[in-house]
Length: 278
Figure: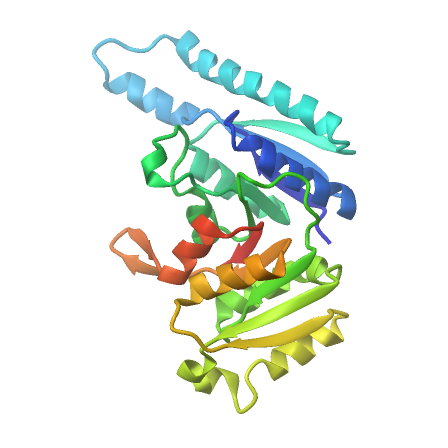
């Protein structure tokens, strides 16, 4: 069960879809919903910046940041109430959005974010937030497409299974939803390429594991020339999926993370809410 759900609040046009998904899950699981909005700067960083400038910034300017963020939380509270949220809290986070949500995620069961807009959209907002939280955070992330309205979650669920630890963690985190699904399609894309992780009957052991948890599971083996990400997205479309589940992958590259191709495709193009973990 999810008992504390954090939803990112920034006042953007994408907020509506993620809030709808967050409220739906919060009400179904009897969870407390926390709307979190960040100023973009901590008080400590403000003090350091102020001390390094020839003309210090007035303290009122920092309060203006807080006031602007607090103003974003008012329509969040109103919409959450309209959607029927039973338990709601608003938080002003005094930090960079990424690190503020990363810290807050330690004390929640699920973090609800939006898909990034495509690079050519040039929209305002924190870029690459879903992958940052998914790769660095301790909790699972639900990444909601902008097109989401009030579709059932989970509905039919499409779960990517490749035998990896991130996939195991994502499946474990998704179990409260997978138990509710009328059908879970456990999908293996070209499992022969990783035969050592799957054994003689690919997907059978994980299928039995899920069945013991009360999940209505169907093992699907896709042998295709498409990438794993594209194959999962196509199957989700064909299945009219209400939820996708997958592990996410990154490669350490100096101080940054480079996403694997399947991870990038799912985080940016999943047609249904994507629950992911690393």
